[in-house]
Length: 448
Image (cartoon, rainbow, N blue to C red):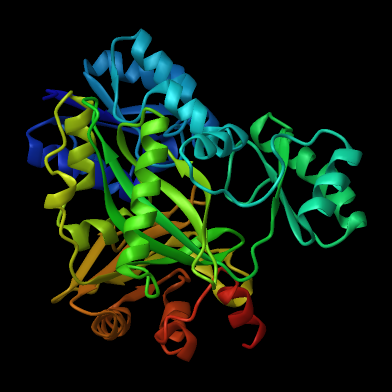
């Protein structure tokens, strides 16, 4: 096991990784930007290193600064958390060159699954159906029109690199396909330095269901069930739950087996997710692999009773997975709410500033993962998430009731948050019935 590890991240995930390290007896090194001197996890680290000014390009995305901090602090490993450099194959290669272990998949695997065109081909080799679409990149207007007409409108024009909804356009006809092709390419070039795009059929009112996988360097791969991540706004997840309310045990086994086949084909080890669209007829289609720990991993931890961060660290140290597939027993229902510093009454406008009052919920079935505290100033430079509220109860109905109670207990003054939105969603009859899809939030707001 590692003696000393650097956490190349900030906020909630940095604190989450630090807690796992503490319990494994690993010393921790925390890095921070000049805007993050009051980060909570810095108080508990064995050593702290400032890596640059506030802009992430000059701090948390600054590979030379991170490597210098790692070498100065004499660490053996780096955990990237999520976001920032967690899916950057070049960063993994630099770590390897400097004899530092990257806690995550290999550079080759990250590069493979990070290219969505290559990932679609990977899924085909694993005998897993993808969303109908182009066989590879589309490079001309003629190719765009030919493909779109062949699979039928509406279609999605998507960037081959990156994610988060950037470089993505919906086309309903030939005219919007041409304009969407050019705008998606331009946005992909600006965001990812890669203009490559491809086309997929737009599945009407799907659910977004992802399978959590874990693999080690000895060829062992398991899945830990699914998460329903359908409640999204502009392709950004807001609420996640496990298990999916409509998935049968048979379908869960099918999707889990498909995810494992894809992971094997990719030579995958560490934690990751294989993501699918699930339609009203019970068909599922592969969309991508996220080669990192996810924001929503706590709902899986609660249902499986397995610490995913500890598993990642053990795998990176060369150990075998602590469980086999037969030993994984999922129980209860978990829901996660992303408490973001955003004003949902003003189109989710960011709401940075001083948290004047913070009363966090607790009690049976409640987990609160956060770096925020009373007196903490939410900076404007980074992601707006300040906390994750997770509930876990024997049934979905009980989880909803516990969530209502917990959200009612939560008090945040000084900034706006997404908490009031969740209180309203929990009262919505479609959500209570589990009748949701990726368009739920848009429809919800159109009626409020």
